[in-house]
Amino acid sequence: MTWLIEPLSYPFMLRGLAAGVLVGIVCAVVGTYVVLRGMAFFGDALAHTVLPGVALGYLVGGGTRESLFWWALGTAVLASLGIGAISKNARIKEDTAIGVVFAGMFALGIAIISTVRSYAVDLSHFLFGDVLGVTNRDLILTLVFGGIVLLLVFIFYKEFLTLSFDPVLAATLRMPVDLLNNLLLAMIAVTVAISMQTVGVALMVAMLVTPAATAYLLTRRLWTMMLIAAVIGAASSVVGLYLSFYVNIASGAAIVLTATAIFIVVFLFNPRQGMLRK
Image 1 (cartoon, rainbow, N blue to C red):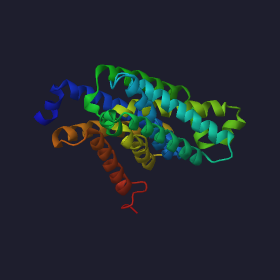
Image 2: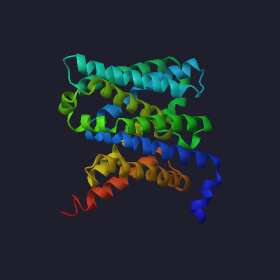
Image 3: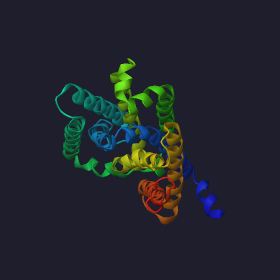
Image 4: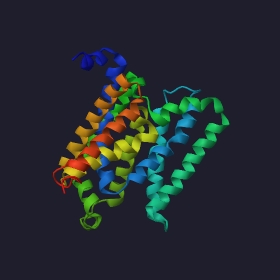
């Protein structure tokens, strides 16, 4: 059992495990709505739209990382609400609005970075994550904002359930559909911001989609789907970090590869509709 206990003797590993489990759970729970509503492209685009905020944070902070979370959070929330507003009020579909905002924001981020090239190298953790570099401050922010997201999921469970499966019924019941949609978009934005340190924007959408998609193959009940997805997300983080520790590969990639492997196994062998069970 030495192989299991040895990594726990390092403080950075303990912080990484705690952050990974928290992010895995939050991403998986919020990801159930992303999967059910076909918003995977939105999640991927939103992850990339935080680039200008992060770049500005670097410039304003003189290259330090302390304020990056707040810049990323603010940019993600503004981008998500902007996408919602454009798709609602303009004569274009939501995926088109996502593409416009995504491309514009990402280009703005690249333009900002190109003005001060010395900062470009420092943004590698933004793209690929660095969960083993999580500080106590990062962990507290992840816990607080992740807890808020999970609390909102619990409070508005029935409303989001109705909105996800039958938007027409939600409007008929006089639910504040626009407000709920904006709240969900903001929750996804917060999830993106807290996940940035763990897996980076390049792989963040996988943590939103893969555990939830795996759970979707096993059940059609939303609450059960959330629970299974959370377990898969947390387990992927733990196994991925151990894999990263012993095989010496990028932690974010190891976490996502673990989640993907679980999805493939369930896709092939699950008793309900596995490809090899037919």
